[in-house]
Image (cartoon, rainbow, N blue to C red):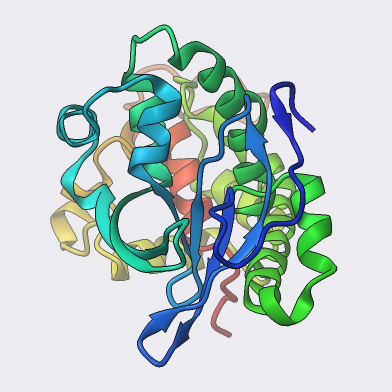
Length: 295
């Protein structure tokens, strides 16, 4: 548990706590209190089960941050779309429409404040809340998560939401691990001034899993996709959409005899050959990723 943050005794349904889960029942929200306090002061958070959003009571945050005027603090620091109204159970057991902010609004109030009272709370947010959001997808430290798991009926939807976030996080981490070699390849060639031939590009695609790729198939596909010209006078010349991806290079072939010596007084053969740049290698690897060559 964070410094300055301590557990409080179990609270009744009429006692405001730091955490409240809200579910719709006969057009009213039924709160469940999961108590913890920061620096001896409570601040309430509402979990809206309908949209999965966590809201924080504006007045509670401003009391912690030392703002004397909650309305002006919200106007000065928080974007309008991050402020809304929700029914909150007050200490007298009555539901009151109360101004709340979402997590984005919470961070705006914390980091937008220069008041002395904001210092400790800033540390609490950066050391406890933000890591928890990154890990669980909501403001949940391990002790609160343990309390939620002991009350599955009241917090079933919250648990399902958190498990879904954790599953998504693991899937994203797996995708990042798979993408890392491609990223390293991109970093290696994107700024390389050297070009490779269409033979070389076809070999790269075969290595990446594009079965059956060849120079002829690659160039045919590039013509079909508008990267290379199909006009007889400029066949296989790069088109406008190939700018920065394919360069037209000049190749000079001198006539040679059987011993490999240049034959004098013979004109060389001048060829205009399309070659793929470093950026083009990354682009076409991505473009053809997972596809299979037509047979």
